[in-house]
Amino acid sequence: MKKARFTEEQMVTILREADKAPVPEVAKKHKVSAQAIYGWRRRFGELQPADVKRLRQLELENAKLKRIVAERDLEIDTMKEINRRKW
Image (cartoon, rainbow, N blue to C red; front, side, top):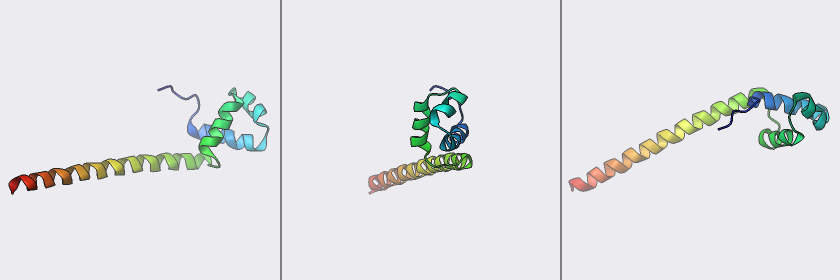
């Protein structure tokens, strides 16, 4: 996977700057294309830089919980199979 030039927090900071100034001007200042800024806007919307960090934490926590539920379901299925074989 290609490493991004900017962190997500930096992208959102640039977006907030682009909310106050013309996008082409902000793009030139940060040496990115205007299309990149429009793509970031589609991805991050109205988020603030601090919100991005919290969003990332929630995504990681959600992935962990999904993994736990999947493991639990597998254990339950295994126990049901063992129980069927006993009878």
